[in-house]
Image (cartoon, rainbow, N blue to C red; front, side):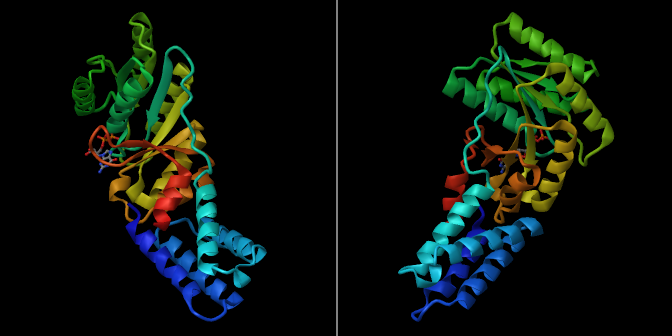
Length: 295
Ligand code: GDP
């Protein structure tokens, strides 16, 4: 995860390790290198610039030049800024409501269905929730089948309606079914397309307005870097979602989406997907991620 970025940052700090006195020029060089590392990681240009500007101010304010261990102090400042860039705090799910309704949105292939299964399994075991998965992808029978198989493997029922093409109705019926069966968590998996399209947006918006979920999550493949950030912006403008799920971090050597998305859409990353298995899910922890990036 983010190996290229970690390696690049490590090299950036080497400038500060020399024997002689640290100068303002050394700091400027280090930060130029940090900025290049961020850009190569596919971090949004504005985000990278404002990041290094802030680090520079702090480095001068905290007198890195005269510090006993300038490299260590600089790494700490970068660590704290990375943490704050990724949201600072963990952003837990709002699990109020009976049932709690969680709506998944995102493009096809982003990992929505897999994440729906992962989350159902996790909340079932860690919070004692009784989930119902709802298959509201009315276009792809394969997607419905995939959710059924997933549900079976984790012992969670899946609500489907063969032949019904009305995703809003299916979602509402799913919630009614959960209430009848005293299930306290409904996770609605929706249709995605390969690119943002008006019909998909209108449908997911209609589902959101009808079911009024506690959480609308935007699921995105972190390996797509800036595209992930741009897609997040488009979905957020229409859906005003509550949080982001970054999937496939296990294959992401760069980390641009993880670093940019929060400050571009001003919504927290809530969960990450770190593999294809149903156990490969973690709550997103900005501080932990910053430590991981800095090695
Ligand atoms: P959907 O179309 O958005 O529902 O996407 P799927 O859930 O079907 O996932 C698309 C592909 O991505 C599948 O092959 C999943 O196994 C894979 N996938 C999902 N999440 C992760 C993850 O966190 N890591 C990896 N490596 N693969 C993932």
